[in-house]
Amino acid sequence: MNFIFFMPDELRAESIGCYGHPNVVTPNMDALAAEGTRFDQCHVQHPVCSPSRCSMMTGWYPHARGQRAPLQLPPPDNDTI
Image 1 (spheres, helix red, strand yellow):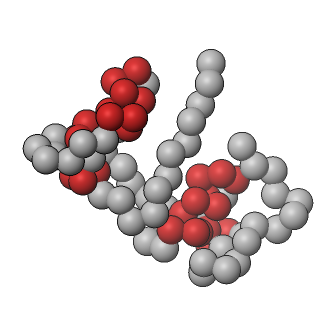
Image 2 (cartoon, rainbow, N blue to C red):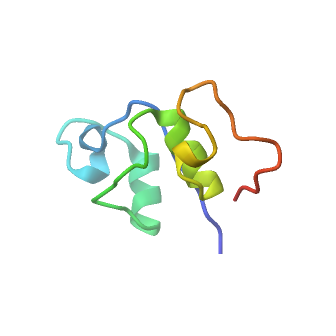
């Protein structure tokens, strides 16, 4: 089984064809969504993108390891996906 984590910055779901936009043509994203799993509800751990992504990749809440700002990377000893 393969996993693809597609996390574009500042792209809202309503701006993609597979989520119902009537005018936007996104054939590659539409094909990927048709063959895979498309989520209709998404909740993040932190309102800032970098800490939220670090949290998803490490399994730690952003406040637990000090990742509260975009330039605060996870410590090198963190295991990630």
